Image (spheres, rainbow, N blue to C red):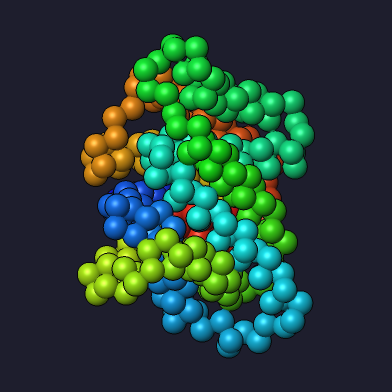
Amino acid sequence: MQDSLWQRLLPSLAVLGSVSALCLGTSFAKHLFPVVGAQGTTALRVGFSALLLLLIWRPWRFGPTKAHLGQIAIFGVVLGLMNLLFYMAIKRLPFGVTVAIEFVGPLSVAVWTSRRVLDLVWLGLAALGLFLLLVLPMFGVQTAALDPVGLCFAIMASACWAGYIVLGKRAGHMHGGMVVSLALLTAAIVVVPFGIAEAGAKLLQPSILLYGLAVAAVSSAIPYTLEMFALKRLSSGAFSTMLATEPAIAAIAGMLVLGELLTATQWSAIGLIMVAAMGSALTAKPSAPPQAAAPKPEGQAVA
């Protein structure tokens, strides 16, 4: 009986472990910003993640065709821009707030592809959360006004995440390991020049390289491994519901690691967006078993 209960709990714990590792890795990555900037940090994180997953999957074994490579290249460009914009956003905004805003991207895709009346409820909750985060500060309702440039980056990252999901589903017929490794390689090609322009030779300092490798392992390799385990044992809805805990875990990680304190209004907004994401996942129509996809901005896989 205990073994059966443990087997049922283990996939959910794996998702929570994945999200926690991702959020901790991203929080620690923010400590690199004063040294190499958000662009340099993105270059280290994506570059090392690409190397790690190329070594793990060895995508050349799967014989990708020219058509596959073209599709993966577009997917990788969006993935790279998504990572870059996300790190540019968390440079100026609290981590939890940025993740909450970004979640509106996949939620919008879910509503658009479903077009059910019930999904408008979830979109409405997310819109209310965004209203609390973005609009109320303009009227002086809360003291913690958000940086407008950071908000622009977060919104653009959210749009990229939406595009990432659409492109990821189109690549679902290909081997997941091949897609994720080659897409991250393309993403690295996109973001590394930004990192070099921002940080230059600082990126080659041994201590910075080791820190970047650790961040890539914690925020990519560990989460992706745990998610691969969970995806085989959870439905798409259950997996997405567990994934929706990410804004709260990101806010807690930001508070503990970075000292980012949120107001009650911001916590309420994060809660509303989480409820919207969970509700959308729980009420979604059954679909085919989820395919392994490339890591999202901080390393998450998307069902």
